[in-house]
Amino acid sequence: MTQTRFDVLTIGNAIVDIITPIEPGFIEREGMTEGIMHLIDGDRAEYLYGKMPASRQQSSGGSAGNTAAGVASLGGRAAFVGKVADDGLGDVFDTDMRAQGVHYSTTRLINGARTARCMIFVSDDGERTMNTYLGACHELTERDILEDEIGGSAVTYMEGFLWDPVEAKKAFVRAAHYAHKHERASAFTLSDPFCVDRFRAEFLDLIRSKTIDYVFANVNELKSLYETDDLGAAVRQIAQDAEVAAITMGAEGAMAICNGEVISVPAFPVDKVMDATGAGDLFASGFLLGLARGQNHEMALKAGCLAASEVISHIGARPQQSLADLAKSHGLAV
Image (cartoon, rainbow, N blue to C red; front, top):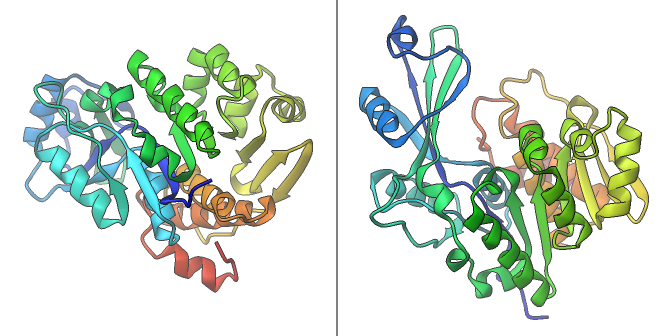
């Protein structure tokens, strides 16, 4: 096996997060329902983007992108694969990912859909109303999966949110093939119970066929996968199907299941949970980097829980302090 170029490479939706405060009455005037996420088309995206002030905050986002950023913050060598368009927001995504220390070289989509964006309007009371346009990120294809990048990554991690487009599915399978060809590990997160409900049979096939080595889920996603309300039954099922499963349990911490053994660690306490967005993404950062660097499952779980504890202590899905420094302060070597 050749030496690794990256510890963790992630593949997923390349989305620009755009946040702005709004004045009272804006949500109603624009025909939105406060506090929910609206899926919108390109024209609506351009219209709402034009309504945002120049002071709006723009940054790279997306579940797998968050995980890559977390790996980099922990001091790992991170890479991300995801599609943006050859436009201004594509520049924003590219620049921001690189600034966070993440290798990003996916070719731009030209003469097609615009860069994906999640526009977040924040009301005076802190309520967040989201409008998401998926655009270019759903145009990922097998051509974007580079064998030298996958083969040079200790672990390749993919998000279930991008399992919808047919070409993206092919890209995921190609990535797993390259990983195994080079004796690397492939990983997959179920992402959301809605994704599981839509693609249960396909997700199970990915796991049981050993296309995927490591599976990530929260408790609700795992129960949905096996259509049971009994967590113990779901754990026994995933133990039979997956080489390694990492399950987040919120305030109860997380567990890893490997070779029939279940290892659990508690959550790291936080003074106040400010925003749970990105908790699972950052847990994956710590757990994946731990495995990539040869840590045992208990230490990898602790690294994941610590990274998650940082991101839920503030608004936003990216770490606001060095996770490497945080880990060192807790005596964790990732």
